[in-house]
Length: 329
Image (cartoon, rainbow, N blue to C red; front, side, top):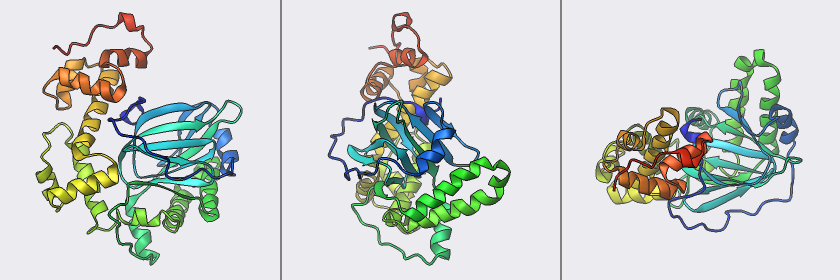
């Protein structure tokens, strides 16, 4: 289990607002028939095609914390909802979800059952390929809108659906993947840029755009999450004023830079405790906290329970057998 799959049902106190778009009436995409035989059990399944994973859920599930990379996400059957900064993005088989940045989020399964499982795919987007396709395809540059968020729901075009279906079918020819997968992936990026979500993606490829600069700031935060954060210094690093940087960061990610860093710290600490068996204090210090008690309080706000209790639940151990958190007063 890695940091991106560690889950909980809480957010940082964000107020949830109505869904971005109503779900459309189509109950199943042709992609479901291609995904079904490849996901016989519930969970997330990596494939032989780099960046492509499949998923299956057999029942509705509450929001679970996750980090979403720049991705194209589809459900072939069922419905899901992604919460980003309190904004709900609900999507079904006629729609696509696009994320243009690394976004802390909560993923929720809305419609699923053992008889009709929710199945779908996640395709990580190649930002370099997007830039190349924009240039070679002569696609128009799009002026960034200040209100643009880092996630959005769009319509799944038949051309994009067909390309994705061919990519899935390619899994039946593993010897052909090295030759044909790059060609189909390039087509998918092109088709995606020509959907109503194209402008959202084009803004992160423009070197002089705000989206590109925020993406660079996020890259820095991911590498330096344990360091003290000075907003003015990080803003200067990406050539923005501090107020402008703070505004666009929140617009795109749904949280402030400090909240983003806190999310990274807490999820990395959770990974360290679970995978490397660090105790609470050692994990807190490792990710940059000076006070284990503050760490435990903020951990509880995000994950809904104290660190030691959370570890017991994740490991399937009796809660009573766990020692109390050694966080101190």
